[in-house]
Length: 224
Image (tube, rainbow, N blue to C red; front, side, top):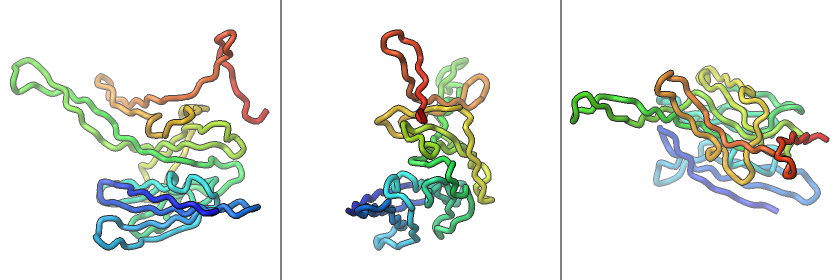
């Protein structure tokens, strides 16, 4: 069985069309064939393609973004790792190596930081108004799981401040954080700058399990 998904993904610098063909051969693991096109022209031009060694999550694991005047994409060619792609060349420039104990990504998201800055109100002396300013975060969120723990998707982060050097670094700064079922990663993350301290705060929608009889928090061991 073969299925096809298509999406237009936009960055600050351009638009990209992604076509994902998922191949599910009978009795075999399957794979995804991902093709990337420039979507700004009347006639679409193909930029590149790659094969993902897993039949699912091909569309959500190709995520383009801008850094200044340049575009890049987070992508998962091997389902146990995240790599970094330069655009429009589609050249692989760095990232994680495949690992049997790696973090398997299913979705990426780079949020905009909501910065509500206070400024003098020109129409009323001694008063202030709040202007909502957006700026891209230097962190990319990733949903996925350690191999074997697909009971729920967990939320982790990539430091993308050194993307120009082909370096991305993943960490578990929030600990073991399961994402709620039935929502996207973008719906689970809200980022804002604290007005007083200037710190960037991330509000996460997470899944918590309780004992229905007692109300006590219950830890779910996915490997039990």
